[in-house]
Length: 215
Length: 200
Image (cartoon, rainbow over all chains, first blue to last red; front, side, top):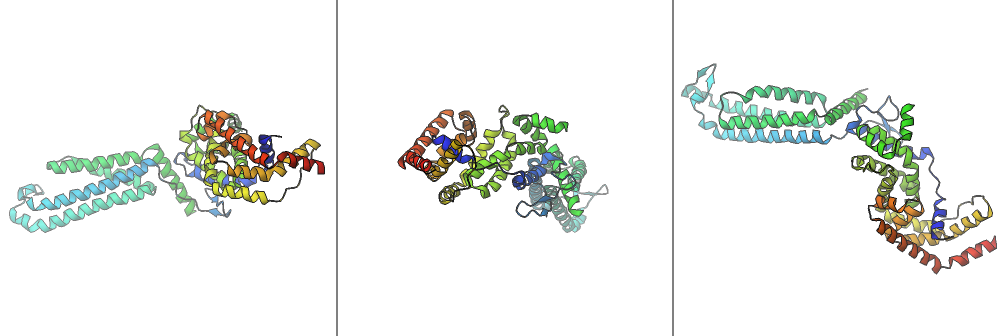
């Protein structure tokens, strides 16, 4: 008997495991499969439930939200970039707000007088800040909700992009046009990423997990 | 039913390829190879660690399935490679395992014909020596030796599993076997064998 035969002989002492011994490992793999964005509506093991046994305790545990796939994560980054861009634009706008001349503003088709502008300036500044902060808030809110797989957030993001589209045209300064296009394109890329097939599978899974939690 | 038959007939590569679109197909690979991977890990790290490591092996394989080279129909070397890497992370435990097993009591004998019994007795008598020899081997040499001796992989399969050239597999195996033989010869294995069989 040579060394290799001895080793093989020793190896025979370890039998193949019984199927039940692999149950915990199988459950962990199936949980990972279920969390895979490409899995769509796959429910491992028991078809009626997404609940999986905890390998350590054997107890059924609440299904976890699957990790966001790369396109969704990139979309979230674009939304954060959109928020940062809007913040930068807001700062620039506030810096140059003092240079606004009366003839730049029209109310109901009429140019304002210098006296009216002077009277309205605090209101304009307040409005600019409020609108700017609201837009930044929207970007961040959409980024957070989409990252969490909220289907409504994906739809709302798309609607908001549509609402922002008319703002691309009009009688604006070069800086305004540039900023408007830049933020709109950022939003367009983010929305496009959110509607990729992998992203759709992720949103679908999150929806199913949420339904399971509710029931 | 038809799907199950198709799954049974499909090569590992075909299963992995389809699992990229339908991840649930990857479970076929688990059912096919998990028992052997588990046994390999149990031999190397002990049953307790194997419970966890077999799951880790298939989780890692599932995560890396997009990178699997579909030219290879048999995924065993790939899985053994992952399992070996994971077992490597447990090397300290592994060395301890060998030391513990040296002190372990002999298991009940399996009945069989005379030659088989003699071989069993020899193997068990040699076990502490073999364990000691394995514990002294460099990790890479031990991986090669055990994949060939225990899992009966070919040189090419070990080369794939460990991502090393076939020449390196040969040299590592030679080195490992030489060292194991030295350990066995140094303790006069032949005399031990003779003594045991005479007492029988």
